[in-house]
Image 1 (cartoon, helix red, strand yellow):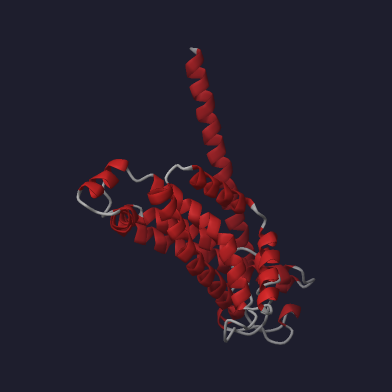
Image 2 (cartoon, one colour; image 1 turned 180 degrees about the horizontal axis):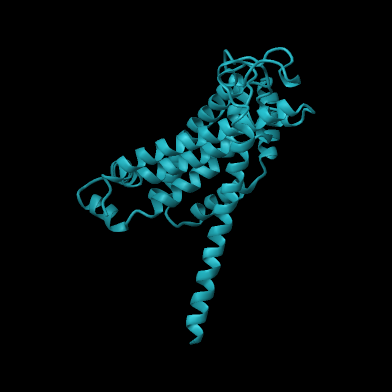
Length: 282
C-alpha cells in the first residue's frame, strides 16, 4: 500500500472517530437529561410559578424562569440584531479589506472569546452608571453585549461568501452600494443570517454568568423592564444546589425544557431558512 493511501485512510479514520466522539457526547448529554428529567416534568412545572418552599420540595413550577429566559434572550437578540446587521453590511460593502475592517473583525473575535462573567460585570457597571437595579433591562443589555460579536461575525462571514460577480452585476444595472446590500446581498444570505441569529440566541438563553448580577432572580413574572427576571440556567443552578433529591430531579426537568426550547427554535429556523433558500442564486 502506498504512502498517500495510508495517510488518506488514517485521516479518514480520524475524522470518523471525531464524529463518533462528538455525536456520542451529544447523545450522552441528551440521554442523561431526558432520563433524569422526564419523570419530574409535569404540567404544573410549566404553568405555575414557584410557591412557598418550592426549592424545599413543595409545590410550584418554573413558569417564571421560562418566561424570563424568553424575555431576556429575545430582547437581547433583537437588540444585538439591530447593531450586528449594520456592522456586517458596512464591513463588507463599504470597508472591504481595509486595515480598519480587519481591526474591527479582530476586535469582534476578541469579544467573542471574552468570558460571560466579564460581560455581566461590565453590564453591572453600566447599570450603576444609569441608576438601574437588577432587572430585565439590565439582563437584556448584558446578554446583548454577549451576543453581538457572535452575531456580527457570523453575519460578516455569511455576507463575505456572496459572489463578487453578483454584486458587480447589481452595480452594472445602476444600483448603489446600499441598494445592492439590502436588495441583493441580504436576500442572498438570508438562511445564513437566520443561522447566525439563532446561534446568538442559543448562547444568550443558556448563559448564566452575565445575568447573575444584572437580571437578578425572582419567583414572579416581570411586569416591566425594570423588574427582576428569573432565567432557566439560574433556576437549574439553584435547584441542583439543594440537598433534596426531588428538587434536583426538577433541575434536570428544567434543563430538558431549556433544551426543548432551543431545539424547537432550531427546527423553526431551519424551516424558515429552507424557504429563504429557494430564492438564492446558485
